[in-house]
Image (cartoon, rainbow, N blue to C red):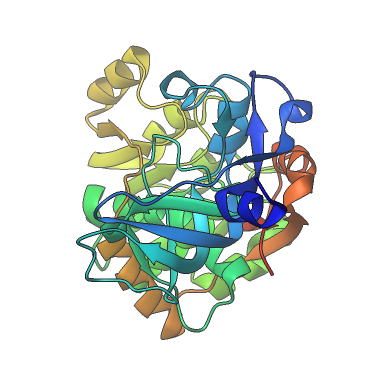
Length: 326
């Protein structure tokens, strides 16, 4: 096979062949996927980096659903290269973004991915690919919690923990857009930024217990979990009777469910789903200037391990992104 044939049928991808630390992430030449009927082939320009990526790499997160060799990454922004039979909504050359297949692997840390056409949406026109790649998983998580699960409405009080992170900074903006009173927890250095995004109050979790500073809350969106200082359980203290705790990182344990029942409040776990229609709505909000996207740092594809190290260190403002194709 000639070098040209190799380039046409293969691609660069960051793969893992065993669970472990960042060192298991290696760049390899692998077979390029081909779109099935109803699918599109997307040339990846940028891929978002999320906590689920490094948790899965370690054998946690969505690890039980994957097989080796595994290409991580669910956030993608790129250009449609080819469409499969039956696709009528997209065409080659269209700029798209998405979080397809989740929680099954899509392989975003690669030069090409394939996925059903309707799990993609057209990229926000006002964003470059780097910022568009920062949106899908985090924004869909926030949107589906705020809009579909909690059904936040004007006048409600919403507490968001870890509000400066990827999901958090979108949740702040969506809740505020719907007219809620937003209380955000973050370090003091992030408070001004969060208020610019729409937070009405900001609590410095390094100096103040949020249950000492907030009360009568309708919805808590907990992005920290009980593994860190019993954050989900402590959240029950700030909820009004009948309020709702959405426990994201670890779900709802039997102990948390019992404590919530005793307190007269509701709890629910949550996991994001692919949603091209919601991404279309989110793109309109971004293009209208109602929602901002924060990217703290970018890394080239072959430095995916460094991106994981940076993400696992915590304290990320917004998102980390891999640049794949110029």
